[in-house]
Length: 350
Image 1 (cartoon, helix red, strand yellow):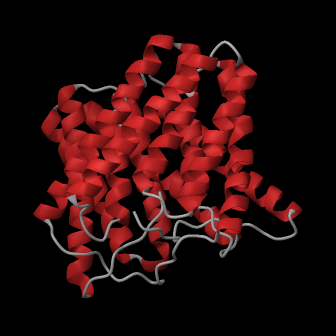
Image 2 (image 1 turned 135 degrees about the vertical axis):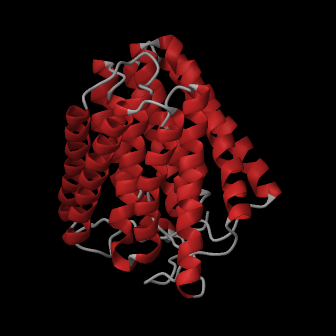
């Protein structure tokens, strides 16, 4: 999850941004848990992604455009998966092209929620289709529903806590130049594709967790920072994983919806406050929040067709995915004659 805290005047703006983020993520968690939806992590993850980046709520026209783009892109991934499910080599090549185009569009400042959902669909639907064909169609519908609820929640959060975010420690950075975006998108695709290929062949629903973590990290890729920032991403995953495990254990002690919402609110307020006011450390806390949402959501409601898994095993998977993504980017980048580095501080217009 990349961070672009919007600028406002002093601590008041930081407080509003933190409350908006915590309110949005917690409200989504409470809603999906109360309704018993599958893939509990999706709606709060998408909502948090938008609230961390946005300086102001989307207009109605932008919102409708986002939903149309999400429906078309998710339908495209599902159609490609259904058409080539019997020909793995062709399916993998088609997914590679789609991922490359989505990473390129992301680096060229395309709407963030659209590119994120395309990438989640591209790594999730094929794996689910191979492992449990009925689950893929349901997950595609869940993606569209999640995008809709996330957008509505963002509007509600801005209405409840209006205003921008805190002052950012770095000025906003626009879209990458086309040659840089093309090179970066190719690198991202090369890093992600071997893992996606392996999991499609192995066909396990739990692979979706690893793939989404890698996608999240690759979206933070920036050639302007060093290895310390990359290690910070692993630290963020560890912090988020430990927080999710603690929260999950607390919820098991009192398995009621009000207590679940209270635990989520306390955790998201902690992360949101650090994202809004921690300056250079905000990216680490943004990654921690994303990992917390992903792991806690999977604990409350496993993926369709999947089963529960110990938090320790999930955390190990997350850390291994982080280490792989960072190591692969560094290795491939060094072979190009320069170091490629990671940071969630790169901002793009939503």
